[in-house]
Image (cartoon, rainbow over all chains, first blue to last red; front, side, top):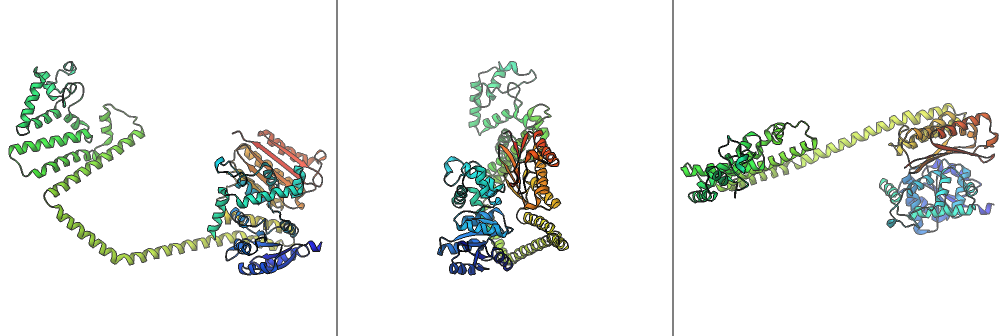
Length: 216
Length: 412
């Protein structure tokens, strides 16, 4: 199992929190480095080449979004999992649209965090119940047919069902059981939603993103 | 016949229906029993002789009532209609006639005053309406006592009055300018205006830096005041909430569940305070009421509740029942599954229905073999939803937790 352990770099400007996460992940995930600023993070990630970057959203100097921007320019395949105390929709949506493949809050248990890291490592998306709620909210409401790109601007009925179950507190395997589909299919639906979340130009999503940019 | 319509006491009248201009000649001819054409020739001839014809015609038009019920323009003016366009025109004509008569009589200063005076007279007639009592005018205008004038009519009338008044003032000002211009006084006025402008600009240039500094200082002071107010507010809030909670945490350090509950409650409160100060209150909407219920259950039972809401709905009786049932389900989950981690509360509101899901990760149970107290709670949830036209479903299986689903259809 050790060989399959995903590697991470922890980026957070709170020393205590970095130390705490390191301890919690010990034995489940290989922590290659940690960093407390945007510049240090860029250097550390490019040097350590981890499978996944655990990224704080709020940091001086541009925050997690700036780290994603800089690293993706040099290492386009890098995967990020956002980790934050904030769950304001503008923060969550902005970091996802910048390129993070998931979002969890800092109150998550070590076990769940390790699970989320390996899922991001496998190329899947990680949605917390709250993020699922935001997405349902953002994609709610009818659009005029002319301005809809059905590929990006609308959720399918199945995706909606999956998101609702996530919001209700179901784990992926429980969702698979509930809907009578394979766990891999659930993951495919969530990844499709993530893609729409990142690429759709729906007003609600861009509004949140814009608000976030203005705050900085 | 118009003469039949004219009351007996009126010895003279106009006959606008048969007249060419205002019916003066036609009316007079009718009264005198001659051909109107004859009188018209007389008036035109008199006009050629120094304008007397026009003056006489104008005066007669103002004084004579028309055949029928129309009062004479002058009577109308005296009685109630100062300010109408017709009156203004009448006053202007009257003034013109008076001036022409004066000129004829040799009491004359200059031709230059004719148009200014005429314009000014018309303007005065329009403008003076403003000072008159509008209610009386309204009554007089409608010719009857009208007590129930609608507000819209009232407003329209006021607007029309202001418009006319403004036009009247413009006429008077125009007349004054015209007079000045005609007497070559306007050039001097231009010099004066230029002088004033230059002086004002110079004073402005001198005072501008002082004024600018003053504005800057006032702005800075205001910003500082706002900052210090916000600081006071933040520190007051932190004292009441965070420091209070930290003190409680230290005193209950031996009870992990209590500490965790305190931390969760404080976190939720701080979050709301930080990001969403206008979050809907507990008595305003479904989302507000649900998070209030969740908070209460967290506080009482020391179990975390994760609340996710999509959409919202105003509170009415069925929605209140939905919230009460959801609260019941939360209490139930906290009591029987509180050790198995936080309870999930998910609510979704769209145009067709409201749905609430309460899920715990407890041991679950066989609904058919449920203990009596759980069944009681179950019935209070299901019964309550039934009474308000909704429905409730409880899904539980040993080892898979329990989920309560509450649905309320919303007729569109």
